[in-house]
Each structure stands twice: as structure tokens, then as C-alpha cells.
Image (cartoon, rainbow, N blue to C red):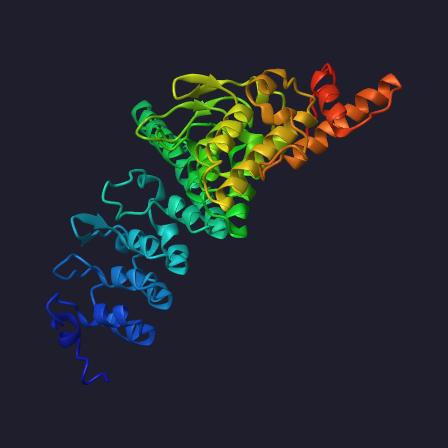
Length: 406
């Protein structure tokens, strides 16, 4: 082996069209024993035609043992080298993050300036470490990388005013692009348990620093989860973002609107998200108005309108929208909301189950109205003759009861 791999051969040989050294070829192949054997006779910072070093090849291919061996000598110098990848420059950590080789990331991150990575390129080739860890729902990597970033941003014992200003600017840029509620947008649409664990970690990391509109045009993590029909994430985020106030939505038909979360769920026809939101909603279901086709409406009104517009659709579609309207109206009835205005516009609310030929028939709403009427009559010492009487008495009841919060 020593006779074949002479120092001159190891140093001067170039393999293939891209001009790989023997050490680069061993790192690319994942042969860690060969890497260790060749290192004493090789120049670790040697580059091929695309400016790739042996460490770049190890990181890009996920060969952690090769990377571990290479990093035993001049780790910072190797991690500072940039390789050409299409039209951009990538260091070894960039390549490991891009390809999801997290064991290599663990080895490279302590020797790389993480806080310098604040820009997202338009072509999407470069993946920012914290963003990609969140997107892949790697809570372990978020926990590993965050302290390294904090250490880099910590002020030194002594620094000039110019150095302080530069450090504070860099810190601000990093915090803005890697804020926990910006990273939440990376996991919001993912319905896995690991995504929910990442979301819990990010919320805890924010320490109360909640921002609703984290990314212009996307509407923030909360509305992204609603749009993705991800009920688990919606229910988790609702207490932090607020389930009742109007918020800036993602772009829809090229326009961003101000809608309450339930209004956005209706706009996106997301029944699962509607049902996840309702336990967090109060009287705003009936009072929070927003614009729909140039007219002012509320969530229950829009839900009933959607239900009526699907009367001639398929049975499955009719059932879907009727169930969505039923969920919202049942919550309104549970909260003792004043339904008089809705009853004037939608006669279906006054029909009994027997007289209502629509498959929707709003069973949960009617059950809540029955319970509401019973509460009223019991408090007045009267009995209820029928379901129709219960509906009429419930609709006319004075909503003096405070909002129920689940």
C-alpha cells in the first residue's frame, strides 16, 4: 500500500474530469480508513476544478466518519472553504444541511460561523441551518444549533463602538431571519408528531415574543396551518396567535385580506381547521365582521351561504359544507349568541328536523338549541312542549350568559 500510494502520487494525482485528488476520491466514496491513511501525505485544503475540498465531498455525501477524520486537522480552515455549486458558493456545512446529513452537521457546525448564514437565496439551493432543521422537524438539531448561535452572538469582554454596532446589526439580522415564529412557518403544514414537538420547542424558545405576520404574503404559521387543514397544529397555535381577532391572511387571488381565523378556514374550505378553531372562539363568531365579495359578513353567515350554494352539488359536497356550517352554528348556540339576524336571512334555522329536507339538517346546532331552550325554561319554571317550541324559545332567549371558554 505504501509503495503504491507514494507521497508524490497522493499529492499530484488527479482523477476524473473534475480533477479529484486521491484523498477527495476516498472522502467521496466514504472510505474513512483510506482517508486516515492518506491524510499525512495530502494537503487538506487542496481543491478540484470546482473548488471542492475533501471535506466538501464527505459532507455532501453524508460520510460522517470521513468528516470526523478530516476535522482532526485544521477544522476551521477547512470549514471556511467555499465550493462552487451551480452559480453559488457553498461551504461544507451548507452541503450537509442541503442534503439533510445531520450527523455531518453536528461535526461541522462548531467550526462554522452559523450566524453569517442569514440570507435565503432566490434559487432555493442554499438551506439555512435552523430553517432546514425546522422544515425536516428535527427538534434535536434545533436544540443543538441554537446554543452555538447564541454563543457566536454573545458580546466579547472588550469591543470598540464600531465593533459593537456591527455585532448588534448582525445580531438583529440573525434574530429577524431565525425568529422562532418565523421557523414555525417551516413546520406549520406538517401534520406529524415530530412537527408538533418542534412547534412546542419553538414556542417555548420565543419566550412570549409572538408575532402574527411573520412573513409577508404567507400570513404566518397559524394561517398556514389552517390552510393546510392541519387541525393538530391549528389547535396548538390558536392560544398563541389568537383565534378571534382579524389577522393578515396569506395571499389569495393575489390579495391579502384581514380575516378572523375561522373566516380564513371558510375561505379555504378547511372543515378540519374550522372544527379545531371553534373551542377557542367566543362571541366573535357572530360579531367579528369581515368583507366577502364586497359585503360585510360573519363566519356563521358565510358558512350558511356556502351551504346554500352547494344544494345542487354532489351528496358528498353537500354533506361536507352542511357539517361545517353545523359546527359553527352549534358553537354559536353553545355560547348563547343572538341568532335573530341569521334567522331573518336563513329560514333553515327555523325549520324542524322533520320539515327540513336538506341532508344537512344541522343536528348539532339543533341539539344545542334544544339544550339552550331547556336551560331557559327550567330557569323560568316552565316545560317545553316540542322541538319547534324549543327552537323558538332558544332563539328568542336573552344571551346573558358569559362566553364559554374551553
